[in-house]
Image (tube, rainbow, N blue to C red; front, side):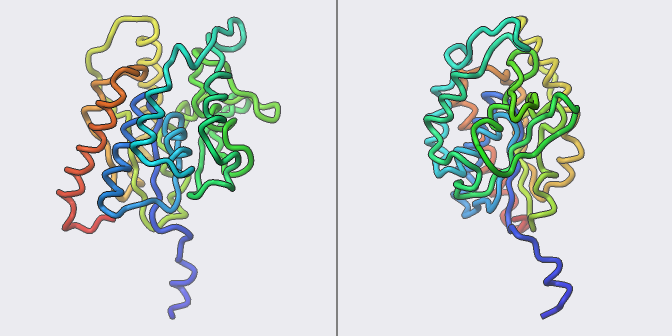
Length: 264
């Protein structure tokens, strides 16, 4: 055996990176279903915000269809409560309790597929990747959209949405994988939107989040980025099933077109 080939071996064959995107994260579940049908399953996952939720559930043994059903239970109003003036308009205690109830694994080490969860350290202004220890708190931190939600405090540090600095966590697993599939549920599309305080705020933040994904997109061996996802808002909770099906159909079509190229 070539000695250099031993040193070049990476611990994982296929890694999948899941972007942020609110309810648009259901696109990830649809994509994972299509990948499964083509015999493609990840050896490691990395996720931000909604991508962290989907990644955790998938790593915990939930099927894509089961994840879609669980997301239908996640509603902005019944998953949050007013917290003024506590660093955000809403607390995430109810959402954290929901995750605690649904996730069988309580630590990263208990997951069947290794997972990386990205959040933003608000105190030091840096991106942080959680890989071990308690599972639910880092996921909540990764989902804590600034201003709307109170920062999540872990070991005395305040964390907010991982998408603030890294909304597409490809780089967190790139060096560990032979191939990386990136699923971007938040393509940069400036389309029509509803004029409301919530939508204007989330749209403004999303433009900032999307601006930090370009480097990570270039790191993908296969990029899955359904353009039609731009037609949905972050909190379009009633469109979850449509988003799931869009992710599934677009990926099936993409894989069929690339079947002969042996990308993955």
